[in-house]
Structures are given as structure tokens and as C-alpha cells.
Image (cartoon, rainbow, N blue to C red; front, top):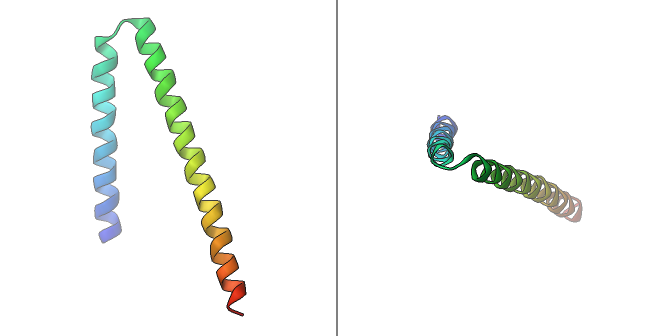
Amino acid sequence: MIGLMISEKYFVNILQSRERLIRSLRAMNAGDAADQVIRQVDKMIKNGDRSTRDARVSKVFVDLLFFASK
């Protein structure tokens, strides 16, 4: 149940961020809006890469702890 509450809160935050971004983009001219979208996509890709890397490092660390305890 707690996981569901956290995921609902996360989803609401994503929707609010999306709405804020859409409002900002509509207020810009086309060139500025395109640049902003490119920056946002780059930021999302970097965050995804960082999350993937962190997950790999965490798995290696857990594996090392597990094998060290044997």
C-alpha cells in the first residue's frame, strides 16, 4: 500500500512538472521552445544513464558483500 501511495505521489509530480513545462514552452517562440525541449530530453537521458549506472554499482556491491560473507 505504501508503494502505491509513493507511486501515485510520483505520478502527480510528473504531471505537474509536465504541465509547468508545457506552459513555459507555449510562452516561448518556436526556436527557444525547441532548444528547451532538446535540453530537457538531454537531461532526462543523463538522469536515466545515471540511474542505470547506480543500479549496476549497487548490484556489484551487494554481490561483493554476499560472496564476502561466505
